[in-house]
Image 1 (cartoon, rainbow, N blue to C red):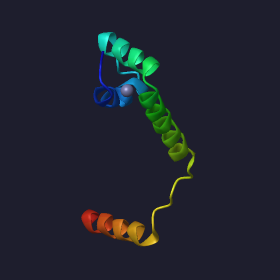
Image 2: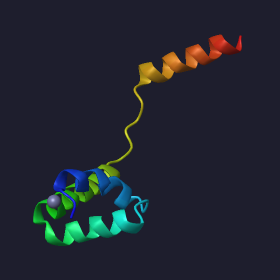
Image 3: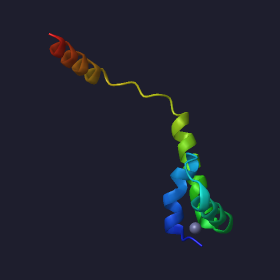
Length: 76
Ligand SMILES: [Zn+2]
């Protein structure tokens, strides 16, 4: 049996499909029996979806100009 603190460290690996073997089995079992970790995992998934749904933020003009200047300076 694993504890919640350890289970929370495995969420990312589990989501990325990088969690295997005994650790995966322990994680899956914990998610079945622990409503708190299940809710935490759902919260992470919802946050992830919300972030991916945001439109890309355009870079500020002054940053673009500053980078362009630096690149020109490096070339010359
Ligand atoms: Zn838990």
